[in-house]
Image 1 (cartoon, rainbow, N blue to C red):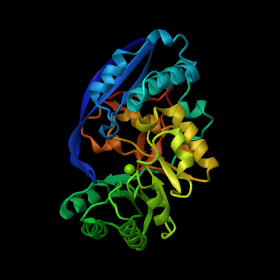
Image 2: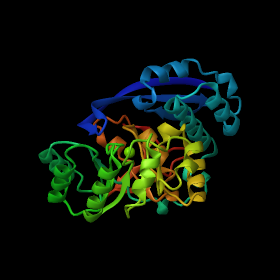
Image 3: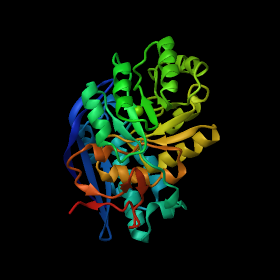
Length: 338
Ligand code: MG
């Protein structure tokens, strides 16, 4: 296969702030894998928390042994070898996983959801994320998100009560909350979650630091709404360890190496009696559309990453009032915006 890639800088509509930090733009790497005149598209949106950057992704791609990909349909052996070839580099591995899935779908002429036996009508609505900000900006962001039926609010800091008050001044919509590990103390976490329950919050994502799984289990015994693991749920092998501490997992393609492992995580979480959500990073429509193909299998969807940017070079999945409209074109169903 022939490999090419392009680095894009995605500009954010609003500087995006979560409990860990803030950014005004994000760089991603779009890859193109070509064979038999068919181009498969993939994307890496590297996550600094896990030691990845555009530079590490490019290094990974430069070192890639394309001779190992004789038959692009042989996903099992290709992706297994790729994963074993170097540790980490999950987003870079995801780019190849997505490009191969796109290539296969195009080769057989079917969208991925159809290849997987899923029904597009079962896709859910996505939430829209409101990052940490000043109360007046929060209110403005909530108004801008009017088309979306569910909002995900970033908390986990000193100003949680001001932020929630601003959100509730602007809307009565169902809310989800992501604390991004921000509540370091288990008693504080219980207090905040009990309060948020009364504010009509549907679930809490990653209330406590990933390193404090015992603390999360302690919190879970004392609250009523589901706790969903994000920073605790990176790869397949993490899932069984979360039983008892979390009620569900948030799968992100950029953390788990791609669609093939994501599918295994869905099945494993189900076997553990857990809910499944899909989330995203700041990504183009390539990564977002790839995740969207899984949504008929899931309980909660948070695929707003491309909508938080002003210059997504690609188009794919569409959102109608938040409801996901899966592409009917083969593969991922993504093309350059034109
Ligand atoms: Mg999260």
